[in-house]
Image (cartoon, rainbow, N blue to C red; front, side, top):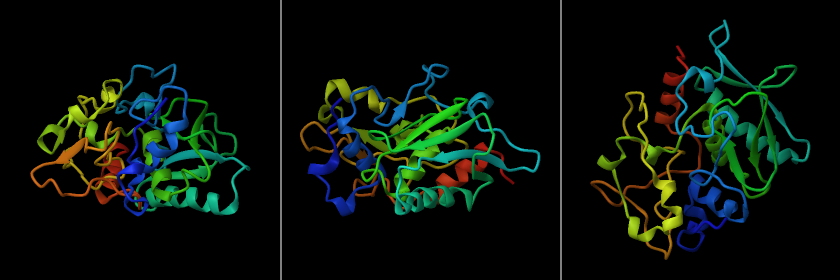
Amino acid sequence: MYYSSAEHYVKPEDMNAMDRILRVNQRIDFPLREGDILKSGSHGAQVTCLADSCRWPRAVDGFVYVPYIISRQYEDMDRITIETGMLDISSATCVKFVPRTHEPNFLNIESRTGCWSYLGMTGGSQTLSLQSPGCMWSGVAAHQLMHALGFVHEQSRSDRDYHISILWENIPEDQRDNFRKYETNNLNTAYDYSSVMHYGRYAFSEDGGPTIIPKPDPYIPMGQRDGPSLTDIHKINILYNCD
């Protein structure tokens, strides 16, 4: 599968998390939705994850524990990067990533080809791929962890047309499905240009022209790579009923 990525149009130091993800995922030869979401058998047609069936369960103490295993193939610095992405979420929400002991449902974090995740909890051993070294940004790790928690990309929101314009003429026909808009529950939050879940300006560009333009100010930066924005954190807290 070929992705027109931002690598030829955006300086490496200006790439956001999704720019980097699309660059790494160019070599993937299996289908991904929106560039980095893997379909599962149980949730194959699922485009949003706001039901209890795909949220990680809340424990009696009020926290949401997400067990994980990190592959031994990672070097120490890779583990630190991944765990930083976890900490950026767990330090400000009731979602706590914990090493797996015996739990039946858990994230199995491996360095496979590309950066991708399933959407929400799928049950059993749930692979989340963070290829080393390509995906080794803490913001990329946080992006995939938010998919695993049930969050889609920001520009997929139902109200996105009030905040961005999609330049369809700059997107190859076989990639336009990556810009679908869904009937999402936006959790009473404002559209967030700075979300770590937002596409970059040139995502899936066919010829170097922009594919997304913000409104009303076309120069507003979109996305970033440092980790979840304040609104990202707020949405996690709302979805998981954190106190």
